[in-house]
Amino acid sequence: MVEATADGVSFRSVGLGLVKHNIPVLPPTKDNSLEIAGADGEVDFGSTYGPRVFDLECVLIADDPTLDYHRRVAKMAALFNVKKGDIPFTFSDLPNKRYMGRYAGTMPIDKIIFDGNVTLPIKMHNPWPDSLQDTELREYGEGLEYGQGYFYAGTSYFEIISSGQKVIVENEGSEIGYPLIRITGAFTDLSMSDGKQILTFSGGTISSDVLEIDCDLKKCRVRLNGVNAYSRSNGVFFELNPGETEFTVNATAPNFTIEFIYHYKYLY
Image (cartoon, rainbow, N blue to C red; front, side):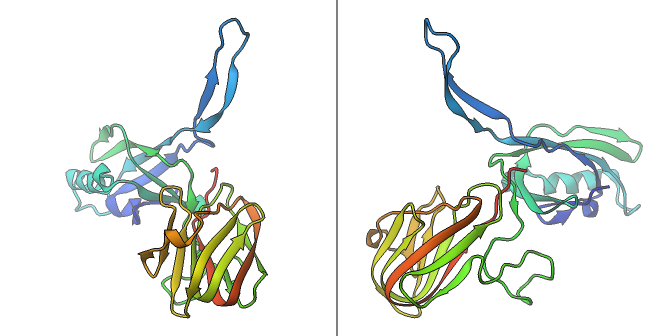
């Protein structure tokens, strides 16, 4: 059987064995088109993806023979309680990825003596799975073990000591990433360019200051030491296409680190 977890809890610990996950290769599309009277066909305005829906086919089993059937069902109900919101699902045959979703539908159980078959319908409102860990710089001993998704300087973390310095950020996912850009240290009048857009931040900072530019489309925030500093910027927020993006960083007397923190996102 495939090993699986939900919200960090293994299926086996609540008496569930995952037989099969029916995750579609891509989410369903939503076509945007318009028919015009007197014209053949239709005008295509492109397509978007809808939520990704999949089923988890499971068997309710008793690893502990003293654990009765209804207690196992109660544990399962608590784990998938929709009031928790989206929770991460992981699968051993899809390593280093998490699927954020929630129970959506009905959960009938085909009881067989003391065991039962159950199908769990899951909906991912954001249809893209992402990496288990984000790209924040970590070192061994900081809560993770070997093979659990460490990221090192040179891929998303850089030291800036001269104006005009170039850095290359590599997005290893297959979808666009919207990073939290964390700048720690001293500079005056910062500008950053990805060759398409230029972000500016006026004024100076000192060595202990932390500037965060959150490019998440639902946030688009600029904070200096946790305080709103949007007015000091020109309101530019970057996106990272799959592959490499080269940034040119300019400032007066730069002595800071810059980190691009985000989860890789995947089509599947």
